[in-house]
Length: 135
Image (cartoon, rainbow, N blue to C red; front, side):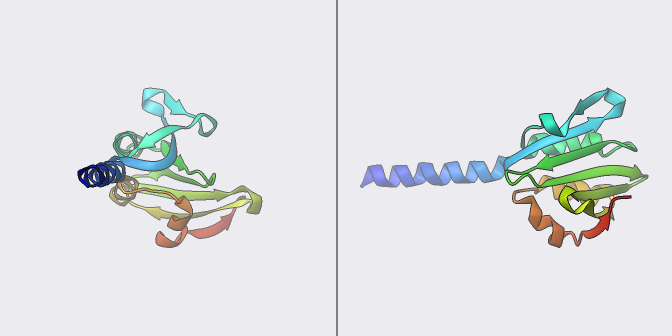
């Protein structure tokens, strides 16, 4: 009986620690031009909440910098700085030759990234992203 309780306790602790610091199976890519520090989407690295927030705080500070995430379903959600306190949230859909997107401010982008979790496709409706064909 004690062994069963111990096993359940360890399972619970593992679940809590995973949900507190892990972004699931998200991969991270970004470009911080001022630091000459870029990770291409094709070479995306595993992420966790701490790493995602740390990179986002740097990447969402200067024009043309960005941070993005890819989930296990190959859905991409990226955040691109395109003006003073303006971040373009973008979910590309290559097969439709366009993207779902919306402009938000930096604080909201950082808030979203701090709680980001798969599947990323759910953010299309949560953030009210609108589809636009690529030019």
